[in-house]
Figure (cartoon, rainbow, N blue to C red):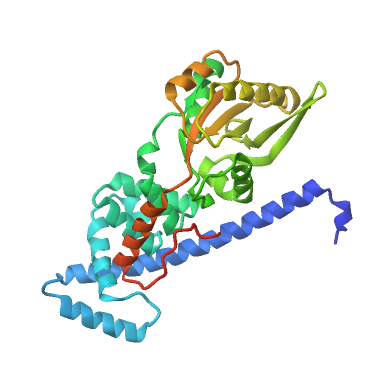
Length: 349
């Protein structure tokens, strides 16, 4: 057994990250398998009730009795009459849907599925979007409700405000526009009040795994307050990443307020330092993303017009109005008929 003192700290960190990744991946696989099995049971029971042509007016006695007998056999399962009718609705809603949609909703937690059915009815595109986000990012029901309240599915295809086409080769510019989004959902931070930039950064670092999921595939986190020292002066990048597909460093500057033109000049300077000090010969030019609470597209366009470095400006959704979120959660609890305490804070992971 090798002595820990003979292993560089960076090597040990790599081993730890890989071990954590294996465990997290396994836990996700187990959770997905369980959800898939439960979803299959709900589907089959829903199909059974559908095939028997049971309706709420004429079949309530049968469903009530079925619920009673199933509860007696399986007291820990959610087989209330309401849930049984929901299983029938679940089957009828998706039995004729495209295979891709059926496969995704089949592995969702039951509460998530009911939320999507209730909120979006026959809107397959919206349900598919949120279902894919739930699977890829592990959203709990409160985060899902926050995303729905913020109408994230309507922002998915918006283009990031940037100067990529003017600065980068066409192929890389096209890929960069696919990688970066116009808006990011930071609801997983659980922020309900105003926040300082330093606290925002601290929270993102604490939940960097969630932030990486929100950023998308291919990002590797390199550090926060990343020091760049040149000509006797020190500068610090809020958060630094590397993207495998773009094969370049990605600097993110966090701002709690609206976009200001001077932010672009500051990012341009950071990227010059990164390209001079950190960029390797085989890597592409570093890209900068300014993450603001708000942005004006015209102002961003003017600010980036004469910048020599590839910069994009995105906004983020952070604070969900408490009353609005309370109503969403309360509506969910009423639909499920469960006696649970009202919680408006994002659950700790």
